[in-house]
Length: 178
Ligand code: SF4
Figure 1 (cartoon, rainbow, N blue to C red):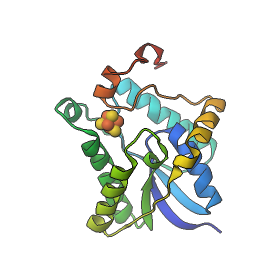
Figure 2: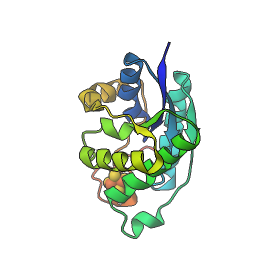
Figure 3: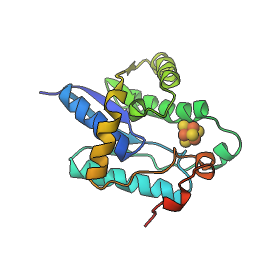
Figure 4: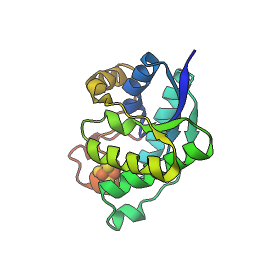
């Protein structure tokens, strides 16, 4: 029997792949929670969400969607810290209101995100909402997860998410929004 139902803030399907595998191995049950208003432009937001829908239905995982799209905040100077905070705050709040045992995030699998900053923010949210933050350093499986995502044919984004990261991406021409 699985234990510890957690709400897993999920940034995208490719990052979920290894976290899903690891949580299964740890016998931890979870619901995925998509809240990423940082993903711009809207076509990219829709693409990442639809890829996540495909993945979760493939594995019969539950997906809770909040499809709010906010580009103005990032255009007006939102930084990575604000970006983590707005997403993780919403996840922690939702977890508390809906009686989850804990919350966590797939952002912890990425070798490109500021891991320590994410931990600090989650520790603060743990106190703010009186809900446990489930920490694991999923970066151990980053490459494995990305390789599996490639094998599954999942859409793998070419930039972090916000309009600023899109504008500075060297791979814009490779983006496939079909
Ligand atoms: S680079 Fe990534 S983490 Fe930083 S603000 Fe943009 S989307 Fe958010």
